[in-house]
Image: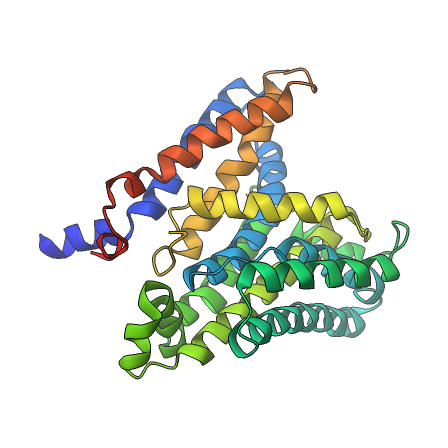
Length: 326
């Protein structure tokens, strides 16, 4: 019985994020003119997966008690890069995908190096790198354009067996191949420990620097995956400053909705995925209720604020930082 209670306590944030998403998605589906259909679910899944990748990137940094304000710009930069190199036959497309993911990892590595080895505050370092990444994106794509492998794009943004959104299968594969091995690895535990108490983790002999650095690198990888998927969704690249800023802010909201502690050391990328889908559903809900566009930003903010408050309700019971990890 104690094991179940321990498991529920550990997964409380993730389960809360799942519950909030189910509630919001149910309201959306019940009021959608087409109802619960494969096409409606596919559209919602594709939009949700975009934010989910960026939210996963943010989660890895937040777990180390930091915050990454450059994830949105890495997302935009890799979208622009992908619109140039993810084209051609199967071999050329594969090399292009590898190049885009390496670019994302390089951005994450730069962030990690500045924070860990340069000893800069994460918020300061990532504000600076965000400007640099957007500047590079703007040089690559001063005007929207480009192309991609349409067959692959149609497959990844379509349906498997005309029922299941392929984007969800892709997201599940990323969780199984990247997130879970990281979470269970020594470096993954070191990243968690650094968020809980970096001094205690260091005294325990854990590889703190390597764990945090890997978290930043994988954060860049996830953001790169988001930019790549955006290219498959739009068939083009665009250096959109507003888009990068919006995705950065919403990734933080998704992290909180998914039960990831902004104190660091507690939470899961899986919870952040549910938080991303819940956050993305708020805009869809306003669409089905036919809310005036002038009112949508205000109401979307109110709905999101309520949802985030529910997701972070456990913080109200925290008397000191150590209580959060009990």
